Length: 82
Image 1 (cartoon, one colour):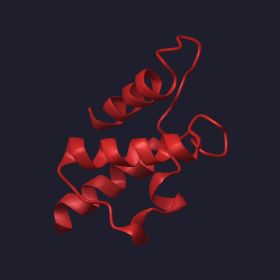
Image 2 (spheres, rainbow, N blue to C red):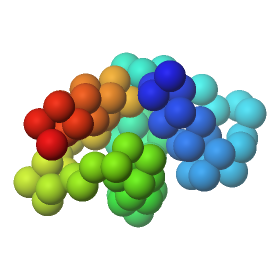
Image 3 (cartoon, rainbow, N blue to C red):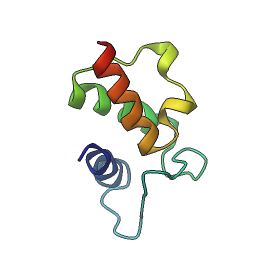
């Protein structure tokens, strides 16, 4: 499932596999501090590479990347429009 794949990436790559970190699809990643700005750039790169899409600069918005659920919705739109 795409949501879990993104959550696993955040936990493994951005949090070094810390077992005490929990992320749900609706969590505000930036507001909660789960992902900082450099981590978000790495996460966007992962989303692009893993899904075969290119995130346009105008799409790098809080609305598209604030939560895992928002990312999944964005990926679905990008794949359907691409």
